[in-house]
Length: 101
Image (tube, rainbow, N blue to C red; front, side, top):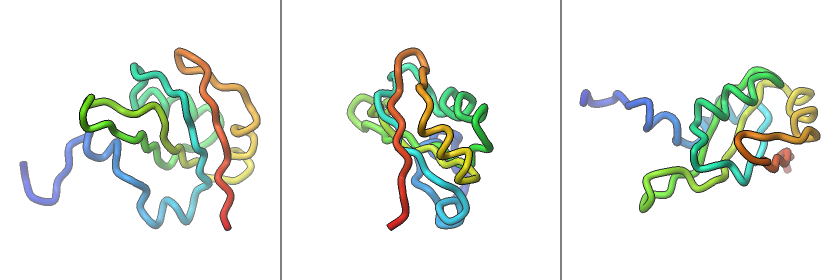
């Protein structure tokens, strides 16, 4: 592995960079199926707006995600609309909008 490069798996679970956090609005998602991948989540939420970032909290012992994470969508209107919808990726997903303090 070359120093400074990252595999696709490493990039999928890294927390938001400061620029993405500044430009997009975040959703907290929970009850995500263990079979769902970052790509599945990104593809699903892209129907509501441009997805800047998907972060799924990783469980080091099980080598999979923990069933919750964050989705960053580019604009506030799409994020607000998305937070009010009922979502399903293999099972119901609960979504809450994160408001700035």
